[in-house]
Length: 295
Image (cartoon, rainbow, N blue to C red):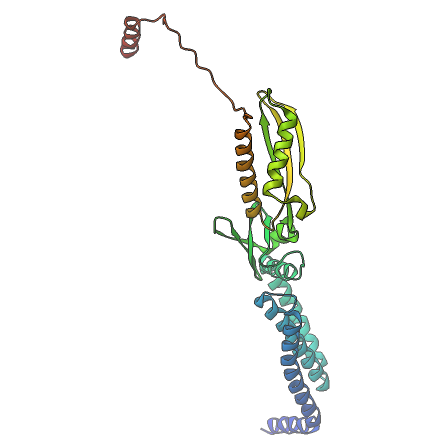
């Protein structure tokens, strides 16, 4: 009992001696707590102008808040002269961090990739992009995955790491797209008339002067049954669906113009030759069928 009493008295003396340090450490922790809340709001408001994803904004603001708390905790433990204890905690946290990092390597990679994608100016929600074999509108950039809505209204969920490591095409970065149409006309057609009619048809349906571009027309080859040409023109478009609609309209109008001008678009034909006097008569055919059945 005497040893216990002596130990308690020693602890009492140490406690009384360190009351000023305890008070300072408590004040530091209280200040760190309110500072972390303020930091959370400031960071959330600051990055909200650049990041539209609420989950990413919350992540960044929470990290900033946690760092503020850790700084306050470090200062409080320094005031209390717990340097040895602090070193032990940091060492244990380092080992635990390595183990957790290895176990959650894929998840952490997607999370970091999501943060990086959120800060990219050339990729935003609402853009029409094509990546990893999929094409559609960007619906969400979350911390773990990337969501696309395809033209058929299906949702595609892609890991952020895949998006970050793969090239992608963003149709929304430009307001103009060039469309290419390949076709062929019969060998007897007037090629100069074909070129003039095609350019006139495109210009009448797609105003190239307003866009500041011109229609390009080139004959490309002598085909098996046609002389082929390539026509390129520009349209105001920010996604692949509008480009597809414009190409469809151009094909319809060119076909109408060619039909009105009696310009034929050749297509493959197959000729069937019927022999009037077949060498095999009906008796021979029946005989062959009987032989097959008996065998």
